[in-house]
Length: 386
Length: 145
Image 1 (cartoon, chains in turn purple, blue):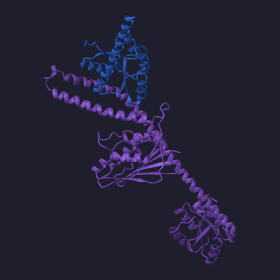
Image 2 (cartoon, chains in turn yellow, orange):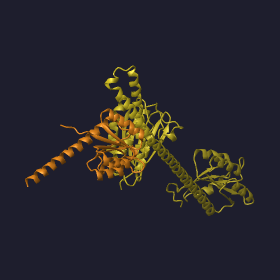
Image 3 (cartoon, each protein chain N blue to C red):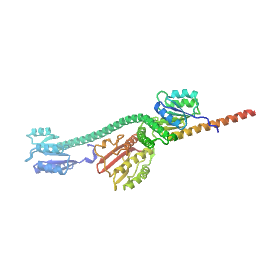
Image 4 (cartoon, one colour):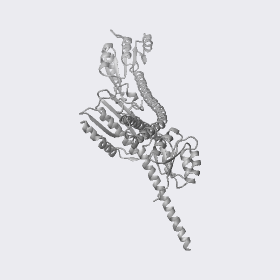
C-alpha cells in the first residue's frame, strides 16, 4: 500500500462517548490491517496518546466535556503529524467543515458506512507516510547541502592558504640564507673575539628556529593541497587495502603515547569486513592523525575505540574517544586549515585539514560528532572493492 | 692532483635570494655565477664553463623545466639541482626524469644543499674522467694503426 513494510498495520484511536457505538466500530475495523484502541472522552483520548502513539484518530465531534473540535485542537498542537478524522451528526455537517479548518484530515457524517471509513483511514495514513518520507528527504538534502558548504569553504580556504604559503616561501628562503650567512661570518677566525658575540649568535639562532617553524607550516599546507588535488595527470594509485592490518599498524604507532597517558586503545572489528579500494599510506596518515588527536583529548583512564565495519556499499572506520569533546562553537571549524585550540607551537591546526583532504581524494567522507566532556566520534566512510 | 676551479650557477628570479645564497656559497669558497632567469642561464652557459646549476622550478618566462630541457640538450654533462616548493613536487619528479641530478625543497637546508652540490660535482668529475680515459684509449688505438 504505502510501500512502508514495517507499518502495514495502521494504529487507530477511536474516540466516542457511546460505548456501544465504539465497540461496533472497533469490531468492524479490526482484521483489516487496522489495530484499534478506544477512548470515551476527549481527555481520555489525550491521556491515551501520551501513553501509546497511534497513526490516525477517529473521533466523534459531539461529546460531553471536551468536545471533538476542542480535542482536535489539543491533538494538533501536541502531535502535529497525527491525522484526525471527525465523525459528525447527520444534521451538523458544519462541525466537520469547522474541523477541517482546524486541521482535521476529513469528516464523515453519521451514520457511517464502514468501507468509507476504512478508505478514509487508509488515505490519512498514506498522507502521514508521505509527509514522513518528505521530511526525511528534506533532512537528507539539508545534510548534503551543509557538507557541500563546508567542502566549498574548505576548498576556498585551501586555495588562499596555499597561495599565501607559496608567496611566503620565497621571503622565508631569503631570511634563512641571510641569517645563515651571518652565522657563517661569525664563525670565521677573524671574528672570534668581537664584543657581544654570544648575543649575535643567540639572535641568529632564534631567527633560524622561527624560519624552521614557518617552513614546517608552509610545507604541511602545500602538502595538504597536493594530496587533495584531483590532477588527472597524476592518477591516484588505488589498491585493495586490508583495513584490519592498516588499523593494527596505526595502533602500534601511537600505542606508546597512549600507554604513557594510561589510555586504553581497543580495536573493534565487525565481521565481515569489506576490502577497501584506497591508498594505504595516506589512509594510515589519517588514522594516525585521528588517534593522536584522540590521545591528546583524552585523560588518564580513558578509552579510545577504533571500529571497523561494513555498511551497504561502503566501509566505515570510527575513532571514538572518551575525552574532553569539542565545544559547539568549535565543531563547525575543526576541519579548517590553521584551526587549533592548542597553544603556540603546539599544533599547527593542519592535522584534520590534511585528513579531510586525503579522505576527499580517496572518494570518502569524514564527519564528526562530539559532546563536551563525553568524547568525540570521527567517522570515515570509504569506497569498497567490488 | 691538480684541481680545476669549479663553478656553480644559481638561477632564480628572486634576486635577494640569489644574492644571499651566493654570499653563503662564496663564504665556503665556491665560485658562484648568479643569474635571474632561464634565458639568462642559457646565455651565460655559452661563455662560461659550469659544473653544477642550481635551478628554481618556478620562474616567469622560461620556467625551470624548460630551462632544464634546454641545458640537457646543449650541455648534457652539466649537473642540475632543482629547487622546488612543495606544491610543485610533480615538476621536481618530472625534472629528475628529464635528467636533473636531484631536487631540494625551498627553503632548503644549507647542509643538504652543499651535500648535494658535492655529489653532483663528483658525478660530473667522474664522468669527465671516464670520457678522458676513453679518449686516451681511442688515441692509443689509432696511433697503433
